[in-house]
Image (cartoon, rainbow over all chains, first blue to last red; front, side, top):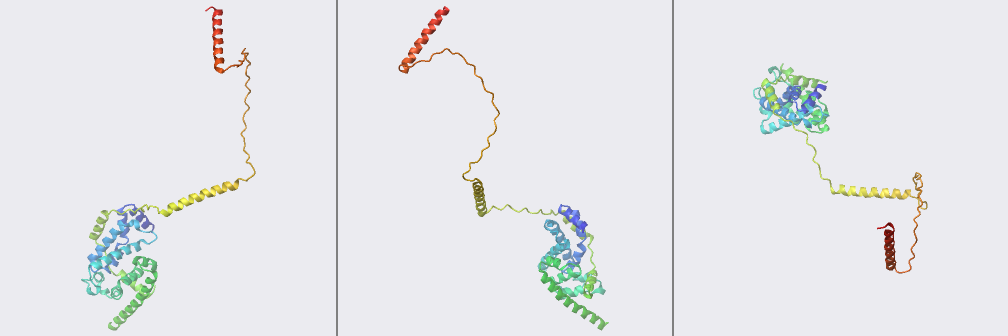
Length: 180
Length: 135
């Protein structure tokens, strides 16, 4: 965390190299998240690049009371929304590994990945909240900040998402036992 | 951590993503071309009219308070004791007595006439002195 703070301070002083080192800590995680929100791998990469540029440009506005990852995710979510609104593609249209970047990154044997189901049954913001909670271990308040929502919204929707995903997980395990 | 949370964590890790060298180069190159923005300094706002009114009233109030304090401190009927600075003793100047051998003029006529008489006396005395010294 201290290294991160040093890199942030160096980047704030104008060091692009320090910022490049800083974002190396997050770019894979961010790209993985963006794959769940973009309709193509190229879009996800573009959003990642735009996120890095915006973060570097507006680094002076970063408030150290936030976790740096929270701030980065907030920018990434906004950028992904912009790209999504420009390319109107529904995830339900992406049914195979060729067209769906998320399926493309999951091994054939892992197509029962719960995140694929989550993306189908949860809306965008609830999916993002669930991802930030369970894949990124973010706190409720950090998730609320990243999504620009209230803490109560986050708590309620995480609870609903859990119920939905529990049902989905049980359905899958029952189905695989029945067929298998 | 419950079963669902474990499953979600494990499934997230199964999404195999790598940042390609090309993307890495793209990001690095674009970062080099970006100039970070500087924090904007807040613009100086002109002070509202109420500020000037408030400061004027504050000044007047302060002056009134000072006057009231000074008046309260001075007690009527008692003259303030003024401290006089001690002076160093000045040595008395002794004036030597000079015998001028003069006579006081008795003015019995108008001043103009007296002046003319005195001038005539002065002239006579001058001639007498010249005669005495042989000029």
